[in-house]
Amino acid sequence: MRKQKEDWEKEREEWWNKQRQENKKRRQEEQTRIQKLQEEYDQEREKHEQQRKEEDLKRSEQKEKERQELQGKYEKEKEEMKKKYEEEARKQAEEFNEFKLEYDKDSAALVEKHMKQIEDLKKDHEGQMQQSKHKETQTKESLEKYIKEMEEKHEKELVLNKKLVLNKKYDDKLCVIL
Image 1 (cartoon, one colour):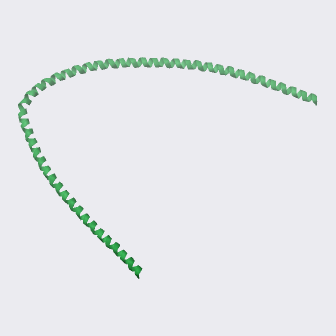
Image 2 (cartoon, one colour):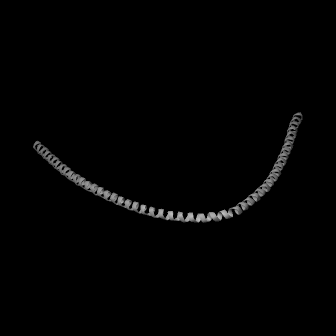
């Protein structure tokens, strides 16, 4: 039995040693595989980073090119607009000179017309102010009348309340006497 136990112990120890060796080998293989994957990942990341930088550079070069084209187009349009506005300003100056001559002819008539309109507006305003004062006076009188009526009503209610209180006191005394 002892022999069997020793054999069994020995077998078990060999089995454990074998398991440890296999586990160690697997860990080493796994470590090697992980390291290889890490290297591949790093290479891919660097490759991707390089591609991204190249694309960014291309985009920025393209944007700069577009900006320069737009700047050139803007400058050209600005110059054309400047010429156009200078020509329009010249024409307007000529038209203004013609207009000024006509304006000088008609200005006296326009001034007289406007003065009459101002007088008419003043008269209308004075009439409206008189109507407004009349309405204000009527409103004030109506309010004063209403306030007086309310004061009289309040006085009557106070007198009535006093009578009721006195009657109540009298009734209470009468009840006490009876």
